[in-house]
Amino acid sequence: MRSLFPADPRIYQITMLAGLLGYGVLALGFDVKPLHAITIVTTALLTQLVCTRVWRLPTFDPKSALISALSLCLLLRANEVGVVAAAAAVAVASKFLLRWNGKHVFNPTNLALALALLTKQAWVSPGQWGNAAILAFLFGCIGMLVVYRAARSDVTLAFFASYAVLLCGRSLWLGEPLTIPFHRLESGALLLFGFFMISDPRTTPDSRAGRMVFAALVAFGAWYIQFRLFRTNGLLWSLVGVSMLTPLLDWLFRGARYQWPTSRFSTLPTPRPA
Image 1: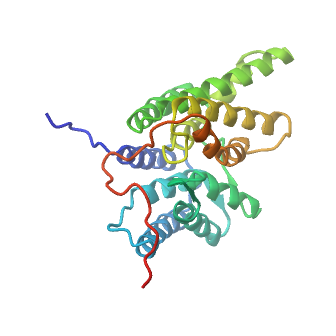
Image 2: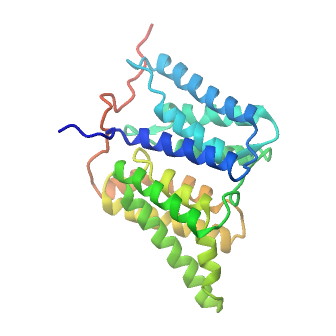
Image 3: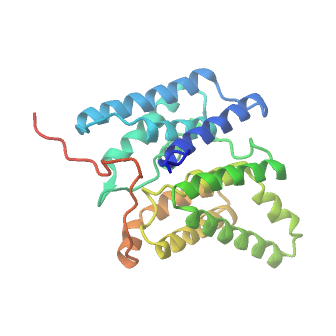
C-alpha cells in the first residue's frame, strides 16, 4: 500500500518552516520586512538555478534552496536588503562550492548567518519566539516529525541532552535554581537550531556514533562560547567550527552515506567543458 506521506523529508521541512514563519509574522509579530523575505527567497532560488546550470545537473530542485531561504527569513535581520540577498546567495552557493567527499562542509544556513554576522550589518533574533512552554512543546512536536523523516533524530536528541546537562550542571555548580537553565531551554531559536539546522543529513557524520560525538561537541562549544567567552550566538559559531571535524568523525566512525529518498542525483558532477 502506498504511503499517504511524501518520502522526501525536505517536503516536511519546507511545510513546517513556512508554517512557523507565518505563525511568527501573524501571531507573534515578527519584524520580518516583506521586501527582505521576498529578496531572500528569490535570491536563493535564482542562485540554485544558476548553480544547476553551471554544474549541469539534470533537473532544477528548489527544495534545499527553499529550506535555507525560509530559515534565513526566520532568523536573519539586517537594515540593508543587500545583506540578506548576499546571505541567501552564500547559503545556496556553498552547497556547490564547499564540499568534501560528496558532502557539504557547512550547514548552508549556518554558514550564511555566521558570515552575515561578521559584517556587523546583520544580527540574529534569538529571543523572538518567546519562552512559553506550550510553544516550545509545539516546536518539539513539529521538529521531531521533521528529523524522524530525515533519519537524524539521534543527533537532535543527543544535542538537546548534552546541552541540557551542561546548562543544569553549571547552575547546580553555581547554586542557581534549576528554573534558570529550564528557562534557557524554553527557547524557540534553540529548538529551531536543534530540529532544523544541526540535524541536516548532508552535513552530519554518517555513523550514529559519529553523530553522538558531533552533537556533544556542538553543545559543549556553544556552552563554552556563551558562558566562558561571554559571546552571543554560541550555537551558530560552535556549529561552524565543529562542522569542519565531520570528515575526521567519518574516518573514525564509518557509516553508510545518507541519500535523500526521492533523489536520484545525490552528488554534484564536475562541470563538463563547453
